[in-house]
Picture 1: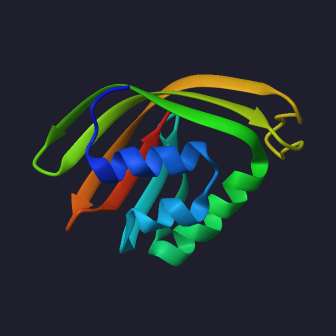
Picture 2 (picture 1 turned 45 degrees about the horizontal axis):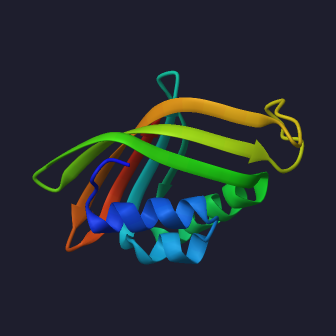
Length: 125
């Protein structure tokens, strides 16, 4: 795993453990999150409560999931992480993914830190 600032390392560990409450501990109250796929924003939240709702829905969709940081660079409180992502779909989903299906893809995540917590996340794949 690439060397990461502690809050990002803790966030990814909580994500892998499907522990939404532990993910939330790593975030500022006004965290801004975006998920971008093929250049289109397909999910966005502002604030910890909106993020929590999205994260809980995502957690229910997967029986197992793992993010492996393969490369990272941090400059002035901003970190870009190249991530290999694997997951097992827990139930049939509207996008066509089927229960038990194994997913694997590569993406990048951008994190901003503020006062030792994550204030912004952009996931792109």
